[in-house]
Amino acid sequence: MSDQSKTKRHRIGYALSPKKIKTFILPSLLTHASQRGVDLAPIDPEKPLLEQGPYDCVVHKLYDPDWTHQLQQFAAKNPNVPVIDSPEPISKLHDRVSMLEVVTRLNADFEDDKVEAPKQILVTDSETLWNAMETMELGFPVIAKPLEANGSANSHQLCLVFDEEGLRSLPTPTVLQGFVNHGGVVFKVYVVGSHARCVKRKSLPDFTEETIKMKSLKGCLSFSQISNMNSSNYNENDDGFGGELDLEKVEMPSESFVSKVAEAMRKELGLNLINFDMIRDAKDGNRYLVIDINYFPGYAKMPSFESVLTDFLLSVVEK
Ligand SMILES: O=P(O)(O)O[C@@H]1[C@@H](OP(=O)(O)O)[C@H](OP(=O)(O)O)[C@H](O)[C@H](OP(=O)(O)O)[C@H]1OP(=O)(O)O
Ligand SMILES: Nc1ncnc2c1ncn2[C@@H]1O[C@H](COP(=O)(O)OP(=O)(O)O)[C@@H](O)[C@H]1O
Ligand SMILES: [Mg+2]
Ligand SMILES: [Mg+2]
Image (cartoon, rainbow, N blue to C red; front, side):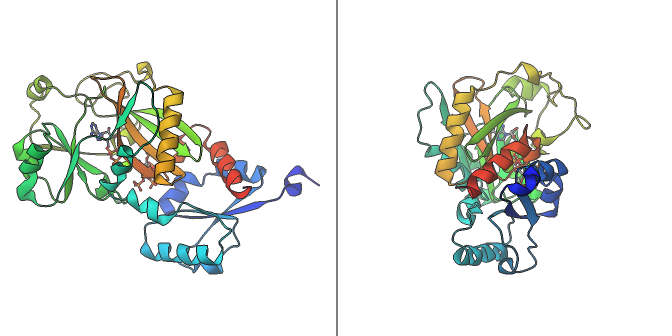
């Protein structure tokens, strides 16, 4: 008998969008998982979940309320089958205000470092945009983010606002967030259960009053998924505003710090499959700001994702 047929096999059902299946359920993952006794099986969200399976565990990233209802029924009938993760805490990440509330509740000793969320305010009425800036003592540039973070193209459509005219042109509701200069690099921390891995990505450049004037930056500048651009449509060393950035030379936060933040975040959120974007204040190297938290991100971009995900799934089903 081969080694593969001797080990107990585990069947993991996955309910994901077609786009996510294309980018995550890669042959390399299927092969690695299968060699370690883990079979990944697609769940058809169009059919009743209770009529599919059996599964030893279910993973999912679907936004439809009908899916949530199906999961609840499934969990009630199969209390011993772990569902990764519960819909309720996931939904907190679908709103850019509730998403960052967790950061203020992180309960851990980060020694010399601080972890905060940027100042932000939700504005629902365009008449009150300027008041909101004053109330929060926000200056230009400010970042305007859609309230919803539900995976739609619009939810990733952000705006850098340089002046009052730009502010007036914003659609509401919008979340106004203080722009923090951070040396043009965002740290993405991928969390898979107790595993955390930090990678560097290119971000927006720093702005000073002088650079804004010099480059005649005015009004509102829209941008989308800047850290996801690949080398075919941008130059690695160009900060997009005429400056240079050498990502290689940027110092990473320490591994122990990353692990502590990841663990605190995972516990506070009650979620296992997340990543968060963190920037380091250019004025204070010990001050980190969490600006975005995503459920079930693009793990295929994380080094060794096949073994990390398989280890995690095995730990869940073997518990
Ligand atoms: O598709 P990918 O690999 O770029 O992953 C996206 C993530 O990119 P990242 O891993 O952080 O670089 C992306 O992260 P950002 O919001 O861009 O920081 C989101 O998690 C996105 O999901 P959604 O559109 O918000 O539901 C993720 O999209 P989905 O794959 O979940 O649709
Ligand atoms: N408060 C901020 N200060 C400086 N840069 C920011 C701030 N918020 C976002 N950014 C930049 O904008 C990018 C996208 O913002 P993010 O909130 O992560 O939106 P998305 O969910 O679309 O990824 C970040 O990766 C970072 O480069
Ligand atoms: Mg982001
Ligand atoms: Mg996001």
